[in-house]
Image 1 (cartoon, rainbow, N blue to C red):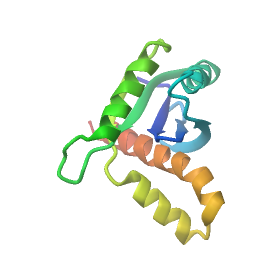
Image 2 (cartoon, one colour):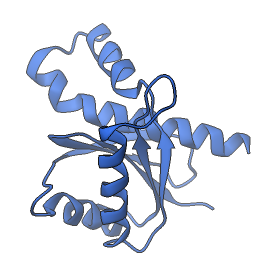
Image 3 (cartoon, rainbow, N blue to C red):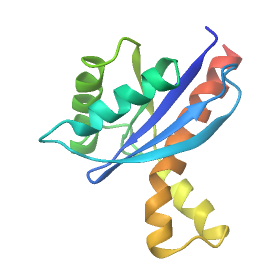
Image 4 (cartoon, rainbow, N blue to C red):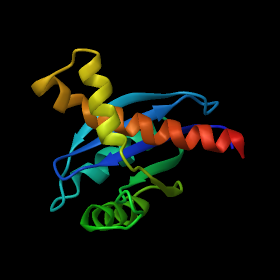
Length: 141
């Protein structure tokens, strides 16, 4: 289905968000939202992005271990996905995100982005990797 999609990388402190073009070819960084487990302002902010950008679907990274097992981070991602699904009218799909944050960090370091600046954008870069992987796989299907 044609339309923009959001890619989401959920962390304990921040939520990285990426956006695709309407044709589903390219994912680009959009924003980093502060994580708000208690208040839910992160879910509200993302729901606003869905409306503002006329998003047709959300791809949320599901962190697994290299062995494919799920731990506390995966449980937190599943909980976030369920919360998000309750505040948006578009499908929320989980996608394996093994190593996306590691790869994003390495790419930023190679580009000379370090320290505090890196922390500010690494979540967005990880969200881009999650969404781009999903878009590429969807095109092959």
